[in-house]
Length: 255
Image: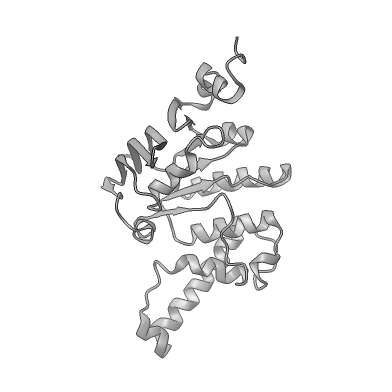
């Protein structure tokens, strides 16, 4: 059974059809990239999967359960985590506390534990901190973990956001342009990080404009154009698809 199954997804804003009949699935530990020109509907699809948008039509199931109509927090609790195209860190909080914030879904404490600082609260907080350090080590963060996150270089902030997403212990991770704004060395490190996340057993859906990275890391590629799905297949097949070439380069590109 697929970890994620999207079937005939449609999303409209008034008279604008942002997504028109998108269907794809993601298997366990599989890396699937969703690509397309700007405005093709890629991030809108992520927002539907994670509960930020409610689709106009179609179905989205995670491990066989429909997630349509669930709050984003409930969907995250099921095992779906994401990053954003534009960084959404808590800039004034420390790097460590940003990642600790990703652990709140599985902390074994309640409001009374927090108010009274019970032994359960102290154990939970200690485990949370240990896990935050673990994920920061995993993503290869080199900067100061106790300084405000906004002081880190952009590429390091990207790593913090991914560490926070991993701290939720997801079975499905959605990465929205993780290589955007990175130099070539940082992109190579990001490629390695994505592969190591896959080795954890985590399924990954990737939105990315860097075609070199997409072609190297993806097992399947789904292509959108003006909200419509125009291709779904292996990277080597998709890159030769006339409809994909036209969408990216124009109608005369393969004449």
